[in-house]
Image 1 (cartoon, protein in one colour):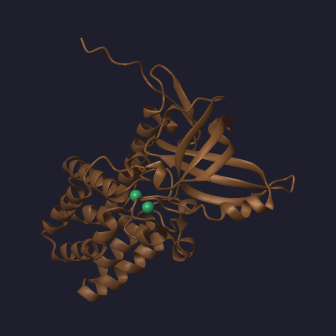
Image 2: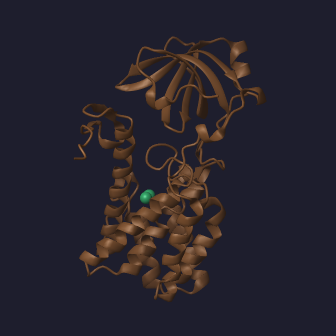
Image 3: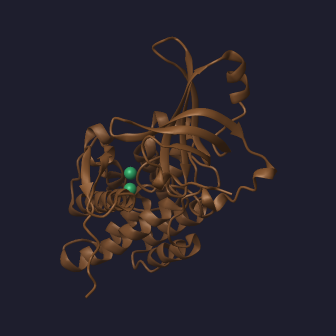
Length: 323
Ligand SMILES: [Fe+2]
Ligand SMILES: [Fe+2]
């Protein structure tokens, strides 16, 4: 039975609880002693943990702990750089006797994966443009099995089971409304861009079927999902006989959706649908991050610093009066 959840850990308290291992590494500190660096999680959030000064015999035993395992820890909750962290004193593997219920540990998108997939599929299948319809339905059906659980990131926005589907579905919903206002936009081109823009995260990051990602793949590290996305469109568009201009415009939308070179885009958007794709992506990522942080903040208080939001501390308003 899980006693405590990350969202209610308080600084300076001792906790004993079960947590999911998301990442694990043995590192060497400035004192030349080995320490264990862990990213731990449950269904309410993530926390970094350190176990200092590990002896060689202990290090060998720790090799058995891998991402996806649930461990039991005893630790002190500390604060470092405005973020909570665990200083772990004891750690052990769990077994059948611990009666672990994985739903306590896995963060999942709030909607059913199959119904999110159906929503996206119906939009793609409804495209009047044959080329966009064939391309999107082809890519979606090839990726269906993995989309059911894939997160959209290793950490931060949509790092949760089926997070990629949730991200794409919400962007599609916004795209449809945005096209009612900006009638110059080609609705189907924009929606195809939304469906395809992060699809190669499936090859960029690794994930188990709980949506927990241990890190990036070889191709992910070397190329990233923008370049992998261009490559995939090139291949599939050729197979389907899609005209050159449309293919290159979609490839450009892949390449430019992160906007800045330091975030991986070698080109800035050169037409309105590409520009809008970037903003839709930003809206969904920022709204997600803000909601996550505020859910862990008490009403009337400021949050911890949020790295993904340029180290801002967010304010959570007092509860609304309903009278
Ligand atoms: Fe992206
Ligand atoms: Fe995205």
